[in-house]
Amino acid sequence: MDTIAAIATPLARSAFGIIRLSGPETLQIMDQLFAPVNGKPLSAARPRSMVYGSVCDAEGRVIDHPLAVWFAPGKSYTGDCDAEIHCHGSPVVLNEVLSAAFAAGARQALPGEFAKRAFLNGKLDLTEAEAIVDLVDAETAEAARNAASQVDGALRRVAESAYDALLDVTSRFYAVVDYPDEDIADASPAETDAALSGIERSLSELLATYSRGRIVKSGVATAIIGAPNAGKSSLLNRLVGYERAIVTDIAGTTRDTVEEKAIVGGVLLRLIDTAGLRETDDTVERLGVERSRAAAGQAELILALTDGTAPDDEAVRLAEQSGKPWICVETKLDLTKSGGKREYAVKAPVVRLSNVTAEGFDELEAAVAGLFPAPPQSGTLLTNARQADAVTRALEAVRSALRALRGGMTPDVVLTEVEAAANALGELTGRTAREDMVARIFERFCVGK
Ligand SMILES: Nc1nc2c(ncn2[C@@H]2O[C@H](COP(=O)(O)OP(=O)(O)OP(=O)(O)O)[C@@H](O)[C@H]2O)c(=O)[nH]1
Ligand SMILES: [Mg+2]
Image (cartoon, rainbow, N blue to C red; front, top):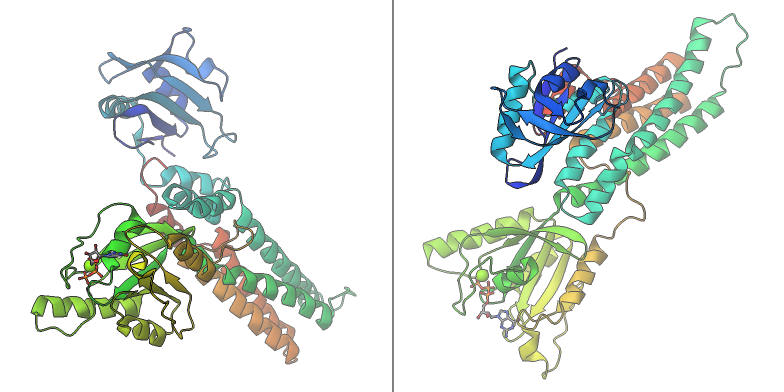
């Protein structure tokens, strides 16, 4: 195994920047690069304690005065010997120090290579490794909280306990199949049924978290539709907090779709502002209107706008027919307050708001939060398709095993299904993951992770 090095922080001017090393040569390389002020080499310093000193470039000229720390094998992130150099955050300094590390024998780390080594050394399972990426990429507090408890093993524990329960079932079967003459207290079909039913329940609960997990991680695709001048672009701008889209009093201002993310009611929305829905002879606008309909078709949430001063309910009808979650939004409340309220006979929350005064936005936030309620506890949300796929296959196999058992099939048929379930769950945590799959997961990481 060789020793790898990478810049672990963004290459931008900042207070600090960190270079990370891992592998058997780490301490030799550090002793060449880094001269502690106390005169003792870093390798003689206590692990896990910061040492102040200077670093030199490849020609031996001092380039920075950083802090350095090393971690002993077995007591490090990767499980191998690791070190970090905390430099001042100058991209030039960081690149020079990295070059000096290469000159001293390290090589550039590949994306995710530190985390992959940690996985191969048994320091992390795949759910924990994936959660590190999710934590760094988190766009809402809920996403960060979920990722943080997954880094801490929340999902691994659920998966492992189901995995262990499956192994327990298989081991009883093997005992009976392999030693038919021994008087082994084999599990009765009723006990096996109870064990498998328990696993079935916990896996289906886990799988049910995926819809929330996807929302938490990737956000909800949200189409803002309505007649021209209904206030779609004004609403987008309000929600994102700056003048993202052009707003004018000319009907047909927005032609193309405009996308921006915003957190509304604690939910990350991927908002799509669209062209106003109307019949038109203008070629460009007509293409825009087609895009509006397509956006509504692909959305997971529709905000159907209707202008409180000029009722036109086409968007409301479109949303209602879509069968998707939607909110009926009447705009221009500041102009309609004195008049009577229009009533909407719709099966969706109705919100009246003003893009000018911002009145009614709390109600909009509440309506979104009501459509996508947060689960009571986080940490065991499945957040990616790979995880959901593994759990789906495990669940299907457990259900087949139960069917075989209840249908009075021979034990080996049940056993085959139980083993298939254990294998699928093993992929979730990485116990039984194939090498190419593991490689693909870590390629998603950035360099230095
Ligand atoms: N008084 C008032 N004016 C609003 C409100 N919302 C939008 N407007 C005005 O209505 C006009 C149209 O607003 P836009 O946000 O461009 O409407 P749009 O739905 O994006 O229109 P198109 O892009 O043409 O489809 C602008 O003059 C806005 O200032 C509101 O809540 N109250
Ligand atoms: Mg617009």
